[in-house]
Length: 141
Length: 338
Image (cartoon, rainbow over all chains, first blue to last red):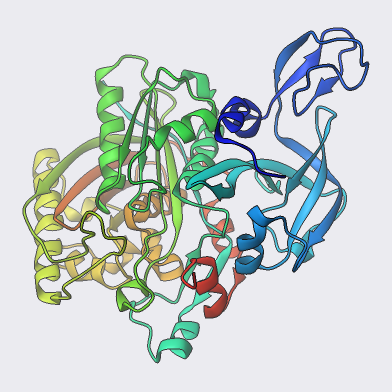
């Protein structure tokens, strides 16, 4: 993720804080993050808002180690070591990229159930950018 | 109108540091009775923890966030000194923008300030639903032994007049002027303390005993009527020092003494203790919680358990799910090396 200006971040608060997705009125596919044109049928820009559950499973993941972290995540890497970034297949269908959290990187497995939680993503211009990361879905167990 | 707790839960960060690691670094660990403490990760703060417990508390009822009419947030370690804090949690949890929100932040009494303000809302507004989120990870300079007991944790509650787990029987407060103990002057980032232990002991004793005594008098209850007693835990010994004066015993304090494993939870000290006590309580049990905030003041709240409905994950499950870090990792995560 490169630099995202404060106003650009404001406009994406529904997707970053609440995982608000969109359902294509033409083909019914769920887009997340929201798009201008449906990325599945490429034929419609008409959507209805859809509140995603935040639940899904790890499709695949990678560990970001020394030197691999983008500048906004460099401090996190320094303080906490390598961190896992996953492609998560959400219960509603879309695949999204996000950091894994509340887990030892060694315990991340493909197929593990996860749930989106609000975390600090990074801090820029003195502003804390909150958003979701994926934690192991242990609640209810 | 009856008001009480319809749902609750806690959040305990998975990272822990043992007292032995402090002793290795500093020669001693100055947090009486604390054996290990919880630590927030690099990507957490009081607001992310408050979001977590708000959602967990609502799920435990279960109740839709859209029904909430009042939200109160409490912490002594808010990520901003000026900026609305409760709005972040409100939006993330999906509570209505029209709910009246408040931020309680200037002393470790903030947790019960938020709780009492939620109770008052429910009593005053028919159909009202309050969510109270208390989350804290108190911090001080690593050079200061004041830092040793400081842990991390959060507790959230849904308060309403229906579907109750515990009924709030009453509450009482005591506030006075007292200075020189645990204070952060405006414009200075770190917590300070003039370290006059006797002054602290006298303020702590005065506030907690006066608030407790006036509540017992108001309700006509006796110390032995309470199965669970939760008193502010700046460490794991201090609450015991006033319990005797209030005629409470160690057995009554056992279920809510969370500082032994989590450290000083600041504004979330008595609220996380309350969650542990509620998890352990049986129908008919009475619980009393007595907070303390430097400066100084105390709130005492009396509850009666009316349902054995328990939330998941339990407090105990979270206590057992942990991963240890050493002191160097701790200092890095706290951002103390910058």
